[in-house]
Length: 371
Image (cartoon, rainbow, N blue to C red):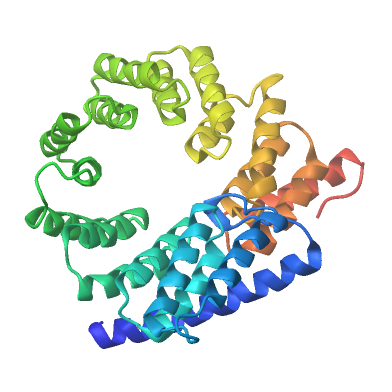
């Protein structure tokens, strides 16, 4: 898209954001309770949200020579939007940011924070639109890296790499954002199978932040792909020395111990990962694969149910839970779960077949004819 097309799309998205935020305010007034605001975490309680809105209203009432100037009004909107961002109130912040963009569609800070809010709410397509629009206005290293990060989070590896490399062309020496650029470039080329280039990027990131537990996990993943398991084990342990709650490092340890034949220790590592992050999907899948024997199957079911309580529309995990119910002999629960799976995705591979097998097995256990 050219600049005008991007700006038109951004204007549409800001208007939609305005509408959604206003609805959220009315819903709060009706329900009198807090809400969850996507991946950004819980919103403030209603009384605290109202405090910020009241503060906004007070500042809005402050007049200059009996009249609020447009520039001052934009400043007030933007200032109070940032207060809401800091409090995790991303939808309400977008309401104010949208008003700024209604006055000035090219206001750079408003566009950037609108993109930030969309990212925190898990709306990555909308965030990318914002950052592309900003890139047309201000194609500096930070903006280019924001575009790259959006592509990176959406697994658009080619575009992410392109924009990260463009950012490096205009980057300032020792800029803090360099660490993430080098780290993510390392991850991207690792996916391409270029181990040497991945290590070089990781080393560059390491010179900027030698105490990053995240980077230690990246090194460990690299060594797993090289099948250098002893080296990988060292990196994962170093990550946990820096941050014992790094769930990805615990998953890394689990993979190594499983590869080395210590299944019980691998499962214990996965449990630690899930203790620190119950939404680590890789840990959940491995736990369901490795721990569905004996009494552990109950633990697997409990972990999957906890995840689905907050992510009920994750059809892949719901399908996995149905299979574990079958392994545990809990056929009625398996059938209920499969009905939910098929409601979410009627065409999921193997779904209809498993549902029929469960129904037939239930009939057999009841002594009813099958067929």
